[in-house]
Image (cartoon, rainbow, N blue to C red; front, top):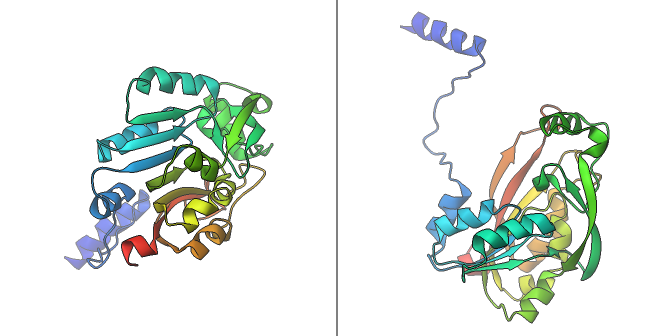
Length: 256
């Protein structure tokens, strides 16, 4: 029996499959499973970086009665969102970006709009080479245009719209997450927010990459604790990308 096990193990290793004993003490939960176990059904959700509505659909499925504030600065993507959700009273669509100040800023719109950012994309990277080929364009033309977009802080938006309770803030802004948190210090310090889900870019795709300290400098002093992490790749030296999503909970609201 042991010989047979070794033969099977060696064969699986040969084809790139590693077999490990299951640790029954370890339980892997998705972010959605965590939300469902810790939050009730009627929620207020902020979707910062709504793009084509991927997260709107996700949160609608999780919390059918949720009030969703969605933010998307790209004009033609916003138009699609408006056509799809414009008559839904539970979805508030905003055609501007969230940042650390209010005003206007240049936004780099890319061939795949989900890669668009206030941050410039680095030239001469493997990532840019591959993505350009996928979208049938030259590396120098992967950024299709630079669009001047309106920006607003979360603090000002909440004040202007009398928002005093947010259950989830989802931030997916291609390396601009720290600046968004900088512009949200009032609502964070006043316990308005229960949970934050934040993308963190650790690779060299953009001119700026983040460290956990860039995010946590605005969260830890306001009683937030990291409670979940979902990484894409585990190192900088292999694959095209090295990034992930991190989840933070308000310690006071969850008794952490």
